Image 1 (cartoon, rainbow over the protein chains, first blue to last red):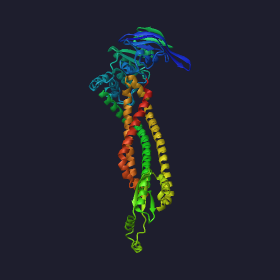
Image 2: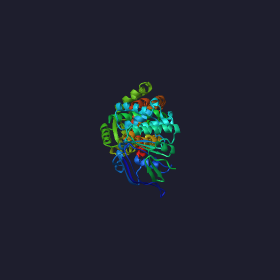
Image 3: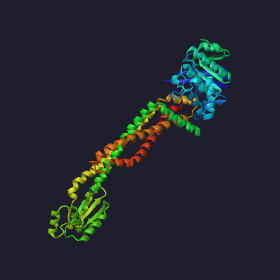
Image 4: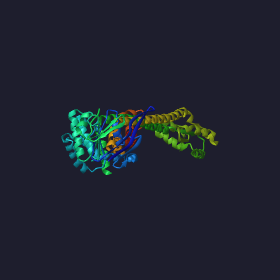
Length: 229
Length: 302
């Protein structure tokens, strides 16, 4: 379960304060599929960065799985991040590792045994339908394939939460649906999915909970929501 | 723990190999600087060997008048031996001087005949003095002028050699200072250049480092492979450096040995090559580790 209490994030830029998020509060229950929508610059990415503890909120509290993010020490950060899978618009794959190695890397950092990795990866590859291209490097893969590798990597830790920040932002419609279907499937298998997007069609089709953010403020939170422009 | 270590090593080797061009560039820079510093080091060593050689050839001889008593000469000898500046004193008696003369000129029948016609030994007894430092002959010369036995001394050949000795001792001092300064400056350049080469190599991986943090890798898991790469840079570049220097010295050595009073530069290099390799390896590895460590640190703050 994820709880945000009165979260604000202010970036001080040349003594001019830019407010990215203002007093945001909501809860996300286990195994939910939540879309966070809003136009570019609304604060979606900032919100997700706070969840990954890439940045600290200026004020307010975040609890993930009962854990207060503020209290996680820097050296324990890797352990926290292994509970969360993250997918980004620009894929963020390791360019000199193959698809297989990218997924294996996430398992290796957690110190998982070799046998376990060799057992798990074929299953993940099957799920993301990339078995045939497992030993290709990112530059040899298409955008959709790269994003599938990224999702595969995010799943490697068997995370309880999957955070996807505009995962379809760089993809054509065909691949977009491919990714969305994959995320839905992962959600059905029991993982909480948080999807940030500004794609109206996606939101209207999924028909799940939608949290709408505008200019850093939460303006709407509804079950089976629709995108309002 | 062990599996993590193995993975770090493997990952380092892999990224070394896959970033082939970057590795090549970094290693070339390191090789260049290591070659320069090794040549300077060898030049320095050679120069001091040559100077030591020359220095050993300098000595001062004191010749005593024919009528001087042997015991008086021996007193002078023991007085000289008490001086701090004196390394050793060799006494050459009149008879020994004659023997030496005969030995030296045995192929010259005229001289030997002339000596026989003379009937008596015309050669003077002498003391051969070696100082610890070339600059100390002056002090020894002054000492000899001031002692009680001055009247039995015929001549001190220090004065004839004075100019040569003075010049040599000032050259020795200058070379030592210049060599040290130059080595210091070059060492600093090497460190800076290597550090920057490695920093650039790591700069190109800054995004990857951030990604690794986001995937949940701890800092040692990220830093490790870079340090492995740094060590590899160090090992490979020092081996290449030695590989370059070996034939260079093999080729240059006979040409230099011709006009320098040193036996054989190449065998000198060969004898010291193990120490040189150890030095290069040590320097290369320490530089690699240190630079990687510092350079990665900056990108680990996510």
